Amino acid sequence: MQLDHLVLAARTLADGVAWCEATLGIVPGPGGEHAFMGTHNRLFGIVSAAFPRAYFEIIAIDPKARAPGHPRWFDLDDPSLQRALAGGPQLIHWVARCDDIHAAVADLRAAGIDRGEVLPAERATPRGMLRWQISLRSDGQRLIGGALPTLIQWDGVHPADTMPPSGVALTHVIVRGLPAAATAMLPAGVQLEAAGPPLSVTLSTPRGPITLNSPPHEATHVQQ
Image (tube, rainbow, N blue to C red; front, top):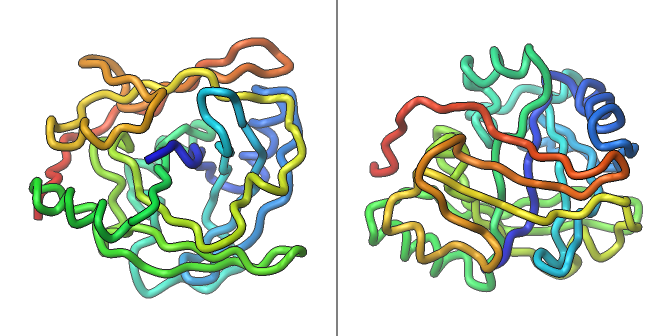
C-alpha cells in the first residue's frame, strides 16, 4: 500500500486553478473529464523520496457534464461539503494505491469497514486511455472526513509517470480519527495522530512549506 494522490475539491475547476497559483505558486497540469461521475480535474506531481509516484488532484463538478444517476465520489454532492467549498477550495481526501484492491476491500469489510465496491474506471488523455479500479461506496461517502483513504489499483500506465516536475513535493501526511482496524493499512510515511483535522499534509513549494488541513467532519458510521 502506498499513498497515490491527494484530493482537493473546489466549487469550480477555475477556483481550484486560481487557488493553486495563489497558494502553491504553480499552474497545475492538465487533467480531464470523468463522464461517469460528472466531474473534471487538473493534476500535478508531488513526488518525493517518502512518497514516490504521488500526485495532486484538483477536482470539481463539471457544469457541462450530464448529472450521473448516482452520488458523485468524494462526497462532492454533500451539502455540507458544498457549503465549505463556497468559502474556497479544500483538501478533502487521499487515495491509497494497492496491488490487490479486491483483497484490500475484503479485509476492510471483514473488519467492519465498508469501503464500497470495486469499480472499473477510465479517462481519455492525449497519450491514450488511463484505466484503473477504484473502491466506491454507493452513497459517495469518503468516511471519517476523508481520513480513511479510497483505494485504487492502476491498470498499466500511472499518471505520475508522464508528469513533468512541478516544483512541489509532498513531505508529510497525517491522518486522524481512524478506527483501529484501519490503522494496519496505512502506507509507509503516513502518520497517525489522535486529535486535529481528519487529514493534514505539508508540501514543499516555490512559496515555501505549505500545510493544508481538511475541514472538520461530522461523525460518520463506517459500518454498513
